[in-house]
Length: 445
Ligand code: PFF
Image (spheres, rainbow, N blue to C red):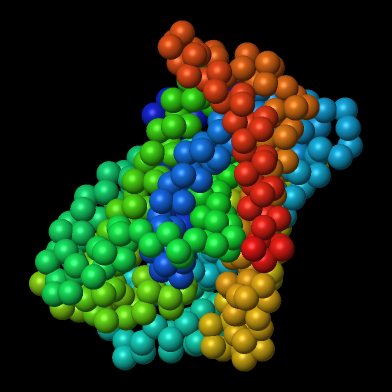
């Protein structure tokens, strides 16, 4: 099963599950509902789904092809396919973005650990007090980074694939059960209306950028994660089908998470615009009134922590693969050093939830607090910018013809026909739409 000593996925399903494991995480269950809440609900949901299938899916297929063709990390992949020294910068941007996202993501993932503990040992602190407590914030943040480090040290197949196998079905069942329960709550109808009845006057350049950024974030795109994961796919795999399966699974889970949260939110009378605290405020309020709420709460936060872990592992994997492939570091050294650096970079985010006033009140790009600023810079700016350059590179530099040679392996003639559209998307539509959205946001349209 070893290929050039780098490791390879154990099976076809193994790859889809692992890529879906990277895609499905806090992005679906924590970030998607609060971004939807901040951006006015249903109209945003439509924009989001459009961004996933029209922009992000073609970029996903481009990243997977790049990875499988080169079997390299993101920096190496660009170096291998282009003589120019400039293109590998897209890979470097990905390595930095991976560390940037992991630094705040692991803070939120730490909250899920905290909520597992709080379900077992009840606490009198509410969410705001919990996140403002520096010992808990830093402790859980560090614990989550260590968990991630141990999984990454275990290597690709053993570490990542094993976790993903039971995660998705379990998450699916639990979300289904919670949706049914929450829909019966008094006042749930207003939540459904907010979530599913679009008001198009709510769409602005900011909403469009938020939808695009969320699509990239949720599918783990624009920073080379899927180049790295693609580099572990065997040649027997069919890339378009795998890519589409991942996009569908990811979007379904996000959509269900919204269906779970908004009826409950309106039922308990909270604000949809409250930001990162949303899920952590709403769900415990619902669990508290549920029969066997404690058991459900425990199951929910354990699943959320595992979903987060399969994503943090893929975030750490990008800088680690770069150090191992390009700098010839041992896997162990790369993993330990990158984890330690991420911890230091993440401290301001961890302390920005009411602990240190300056970190909590700092406002840039309309985002208040270091954690929200990091989330905006790395998810809404860095990922779409990365996606823009990846589509330009595959469309025009490496060239769609060469990409097609990789993509069409193991596809049916029917599929090949559908795929001829993909070339138009990566060459024209993806870069143009991304540019348009970024420029209109900068111009404040
Ligand atoms: N897709 C993950 C989520 O939705 O939680 C977050 C993520 C993982 C983003 C890996 C980017 C990435 F490279």
